[in-house]
Picture 1: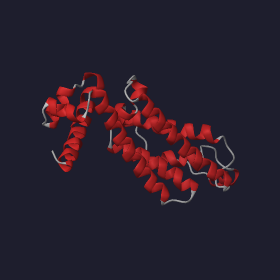
Picture 2: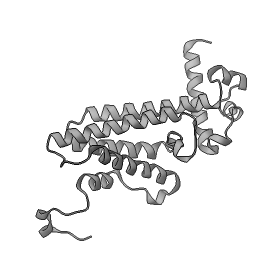
Picture 3: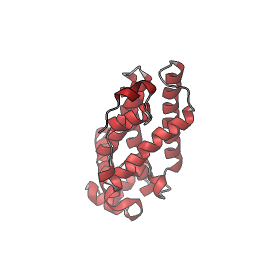
Picture 4: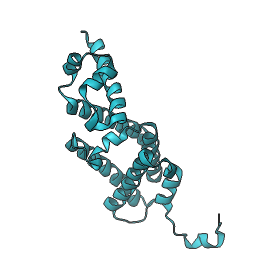
Length: 200
């Protein structure tokens, strides 16, 4: 088996595993089901992954890396901290819409144990990223002084809630624009805005 063929087979397995895990959940999925969906023998499947947990964690890492790369590329193109927060929220929400299987990445919140350490480190990196944006915004005078860590947790919790909504309550899904506006501007009107209130 040449390297290119092996890489393609691995990608095919991961695509099939995504469908199987999404449809049946982690616990009810099996290596045999994934082998059938991949059009590969069960023995061939074990040449690439030692067990279901290994396959799941690999899939999870691939999805997280893809999300992180997409986010990093977009944030590098934005210098303004407010713009970076908008980009972070928009990319996270749109990525969740496009990849409903993100539920797999958030699995620890639903009782899934595989890859807990990997997921924890990923979320910690995301938390530090948001905190850094907020601190830069405070230092530059774009954001008012606030507790950067708590603000970061609030932003990430809003996105986490969105992902749960995508899976379970599609009618409650909100737009990234409204989420960004609410987080960046809040609900309270400023003094100079009170005389120009518009009621909808």
